[in-house]
Amino acid sequence: MIQIASPQEDEVFIAKTLMGMEDVLRDELLKIGARDIHVMRRAVQFKGDLGFLYKANLCLGSALRILWSIAHLSAEDGDELRDKVREIPWENYFDVDKTIAVYAVGSHPGINHTGMAALLVKDGIADRFRYVMDKRPNVDRENPDVRIELFLNRRQCIVSLDASGESLHRRGYRQDMGPAPMSEVLANGLVRLTGYRGDYTFMDGMTGSGTLAIEAAIIADQLPPGIYRKRFAFTQWSCYDKELHAAIEASSLKRISERSLKIVACDLGDLSAAKTNATAALVDERIEWQSMEFFDSKPPTERGILVLNPPYGHKMEVDVDDMYSSIGAHLKKAYKGWTAWVVIPSETADRAIGMRASLRYQFMNGDIDCDWAQYEIFEGS
Image (tube, rainbow, N blue to C red; front, side, top):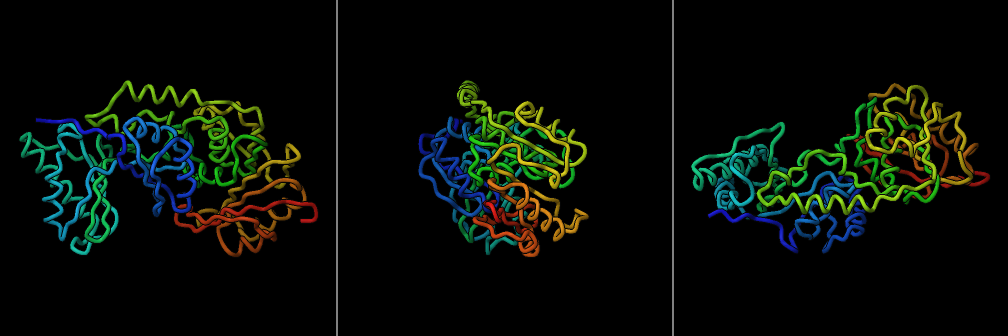
């Protein structure tokens, strides 16, 4: 007999994030009421119930996906892994008519690679459904109804259901990518690291497709970042509670509190992509758009936070050292009294800017090691 499995009061969940954003995510989880929080590498473990699982997907800005850990296994080899996965009552979690995809991360001394581990888990799930229901779920790697994740740490294995599905950085508001766009999750985390919460002027000096400015508006107005999405994977689970989901969503929308303080975004040339994205995110009217080069810009108020994500990397045809030297010169000339946060992609860029950072955080932007560096601009800087 099928007994629907549902997260209970103290269920273990894992929120995955980008390298360098773990503490940001921990602070977000604390703010929304998570319990028993433990920071991990590129992830944060916490406890909650089904409603909190919905809340985490809707309200966390620095999370990539939320996992529900349903089984902790020990397996000496692939055969034992498949056999133990077959013992999990999968029919209690989702219907056999749902499509599935299995992903594996980590390493196991008895299994050659993660692709093989994922295949073994898929076979174990299929065997279980065939035994119980005489049919098996189909696989859909592109757009599965149910996403299963396997974490391997030597011979220890954690099997999880992915509650998010598509990565949470895909908010749903980005209509126009522009060149070298920054991930929404990364942008949200970087803005949070500045300490910005909507209580003073915020300026994005090289806005591109507008992601930093848009995420700043989302943070300032306490918009739930997941509200733009049309689909979460948890809606495909047997335990999905539509009324509870709607209630959690309505409660999160009550927190919205539009601030009157300025958010300014500037860039040289066409700002249509940024404006289109901001309109889709429902924050276009919150942002003042300025079509000008940063090096011609002036601070809109006496004090505020300025963020800069300059073009860099092998895809961008710019002289990075010259650009960062010019950034440093303009900051010292025009932005006295402000706090600037700048993406620093290399040691030479760090030297070229010509200022000592008062604070810095390490992170990865794609495959590039970067620093998020804070510069306090004083008289005589």
